[in-house]
Length: 329
Ligand SMILES: Nc1ncnc2c1ncn2[C@@H]1O[C@H](COP(=O)(O)OP(=O)(O)OP(=O)(O)O)[C@@H](O)[C@H]1O
Image (cartoon, rainbow, N blue to C red):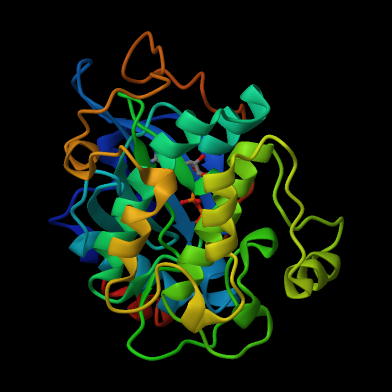
């Protein structure tokens, strides 16, 4: 057995050696997400294994964010949020074993379709609204909504993934995090932010689904920030009146006036006329058929994901005394 992957701390836990490692599903700042299966059973279900390089986590000062990702996911149990089965570690990596969402990223769907019809956008957004309602009920902000982080499961329903920026916020957070096109003005201006940033990002996502491109776009982040702060949004004829009205209410720079914010904020969102006819109980029960169900040949089929060359880079583990920082995994 390879010692690198079997530290004493993990003696009684599941370890990397227990898995057959299949293709790469995606790459991120800290490493890769690989499709894996438990060894010794051909019919074993496939999982997504998020592998985070400890040295990179420390170098980028992201340990607190990774701990928060683990703790938020461990507490979350919701049909539209990815399930974290367990975490483990060795001297080089932290591992998060996640359920596998075989339909790929919403990002790929939008790029493939060009843009979504109103009803298709409404289906996905309704599920995300319920995931936000759930997270926000414990003052947890997701803070990284973008089409790359919305995955599609085998039945065509939404699974939010990547909780690296998710955080319980009682008053305000001042961390600059998120993706330029999806940042709320209060994040750009370092004014302190809370769960309201998720509703702003939802407005950006609805816009991107319907138009096929985001509302504030430029080749460099500074240009994007200027456009976000300018408050100008252009709507073409593809937007119907109701969706335009809702997007404007989410893309409201004044946080206290932003839709979704405040005591009954989410109820107001759910009653907005764009959602007219949506049966929220059926949405939660996943009884509304998805507009697109991925056709997979087997449960470890990955053809809805991009191809990634195999990793060859060797990353040295952090010194053993530093490893104590990861004791929670
Ligand atoms: N449970 C999953 N099922 C299928 N694919 C997944 C799963 N989790 C992650 N992926 C794929 O891996 C990609 C990267 O995952 P994730 O965003 O969690 O990593 P990250 O290191 O936090 O990335 P980033 O640097 O963008 O924040 C996702 O965009 C997705 O394509």
